[in-house]
Length: 487
Image (cartoon, rainbow, N blue to C red):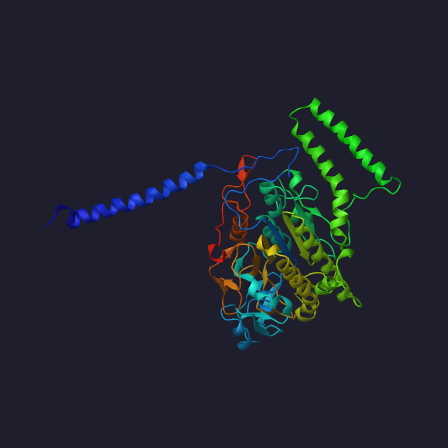
């Protein structure tokens, strides 16, 4: 027998071989760590100058559509025939279950039928038929999980990767990393719902501990950017001459204090504001849009509160498309707002009476959002734009005891992507047979963020900002790119 082929030598070499594999893994990890964090070199005098990606990007910009109030996955995109079969029965294994607002009642099927859509045959609810017609454009993630069942912290978590206030939003991280493609508009624009802001308010588009230059600028199609308009007492010529003169004074002042980054940043922000006096009113004025475009989005509707609200949201969708056309790096479009004093038509928080409330929300959100996606595609903008549709968490498959609505559920919910770099007509992950918990290819919000950054050509493990002795990043110390959804 060969001396290396006896039992003792075989076991010994196996043991040392496993150790070698472990050593190789540790060295690879240490080599990655040794590469160090990537902190973009930001010129304070021009903080939004374009910056290079870490590796070739699939998408140049992001359009995020956020539905405030937690959209029910089992009433929109997550088809569960078992809910139909067991309608009115207790959910197995959930006896005595108490969630955010109290005890749960029985399983409740969706009030809306699901139908196969497009070539993919994706089952989508009749609540959102226009979006359903575009199912072949979408890449669904059905297994998202959150860390909280409370709206404000849930919105924070989706926006920033943290449930607490004070951390940079995803759009702020993106503009910090990549700058802008347009020097007359902000790199990051947030478009609040016509009804108002989400529950986390400005924290959703805030810069956190990043420089203030990277916060989102919030305005919509009906509310112009605040404090930007030229005073009526000043002519355009006088205003322009005043800006030119101030520019000369600022340059001389900066020459006296070379290297003062705070002074350079302040001058830069004033100069951008001056340029925005011309660019923002132009991009926000949708009166030049042809009638067929207004009709496509539903911006021409009126006659009752829901149609009026739909038209206002539709105008915001048109504004979002115009900003994407202009090269704004990150556009955040909100559907739903935080309002106290009843459920009305404020957001998707359907606790008490889901069906009448969602009928209103479905009409407001569905057609304009679908038109936005279709319009981006026909203009060729989906080739380098990533569209993200998401909400803070999902809803229970049961109705609350004593109510006809669904409680909060962060254990399994749905988001979808479309456009640059993602598969079309594809579904990833799954919840259980009732839509209660993610059970297949479970994904976290950290994974979701990591995937979006990856599509932008950014390494989520290395993009960082040094703050209070810690290398901070959007995904904290978590997150993996969801490779299966990448085209």
